[in-house]
Image (spheres, rainbow, N blue to C red):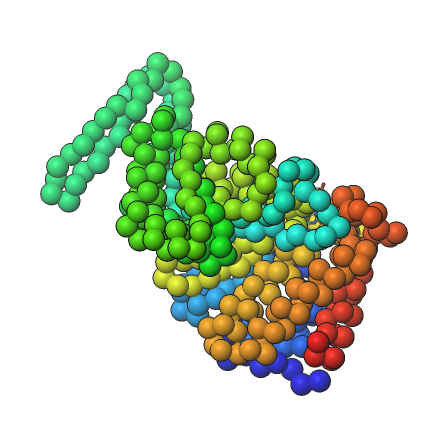
Length: 406
Ligand code: NAP
Ligand code: MG
């Protein structure tokens, strides 16, 4: 069987812990035997980020801007515990925050559904897709601790020297203070990305914020979303039968757990972070959630929505073959390969990506799955597979699909 060729390389961003172990395995068993895989490789493992003073994170984002499509493994966000564990020179910002700050854009997170797993919310009939604004707010905030009485102010100095100033708080003792920002241009491209996605996927769209409390900040989000809808998308949405609905975030949460699902939920950065994990868990498993960053510059970054699965990694290091679910990692690769194929016009590669997804879904639906899914499956599978056995079960199926051309 000749291998599928690629025209343009993908930006491959390696990561940490259990996902790094699975990354290698997925490539070795499911990709390299079938594709003449071309990638430009960036090692965002914690030690290499530390060795390069984190320059590698920004370089990987610029490579995505240059090549158009990237695929990323999960990475550790360093904190003091990690600094001690890995003997780091410095604490570095989250690589995802660094990459998103360079690419801007919106992250779409969609659960991967299989027939044998029902969502924990019994009323959901179709998946809920999260559209998470990937720029600013608390992820790009300036914050500090103050150690005694004093006044904290918010000061803006215009280019013309004109000043706007207001008091944040009069401190009577020690405390904390934070300044967040966002740009109209970024909010506008977030809104556009969401409406375009909703039209492409034929999904109703919801947007929620807390504009009753945050009248200026969240108020601006609400206003821009409404304006983009009215001026650019209302007609197209009406023609396509797609509705746009704005509500308060707490109301949205209440409606989500009582509703039928089947819509795009546009969320501000923090809401999207929290709600996507809720949607993923309630839909089955964190490991069954795809994630793609769509940048206004027209480039794409695919990843799994979950983290590095730290506790499984420690067990793997002790010699255990863990039952860590690699499905979202595999779908990060298939998403990236399919997008590469679309941009390069290489239908053979697109076909392979689709078949690999089919092979994964069939494997699970035919009763072969990792333990996170086995706990939820109906019918209950006879045995539970570890990651190596699961990937081998997928490999057998993709091999057949490739050989028979079905
Ligand atoms: P996590 O890696 O997502 O894991 C949380 C828990 O979810 C796991 O302990 C496991 O539950 C379950 N889980 C997640 N993925 C799974 C999979 N593929 N298969 C089976 N179970 C899975 O989150 P975390 O433990 O909070 O974070 C670990 C590290 O990941 C942190 O250093 C964090 O900074 C980083 N992180 C990175 C990203 C990213 O790069 N995109 C995102 C989030 C977190 P059980 O233990 O019950 O099996
Ligand atoms: Mg998160």
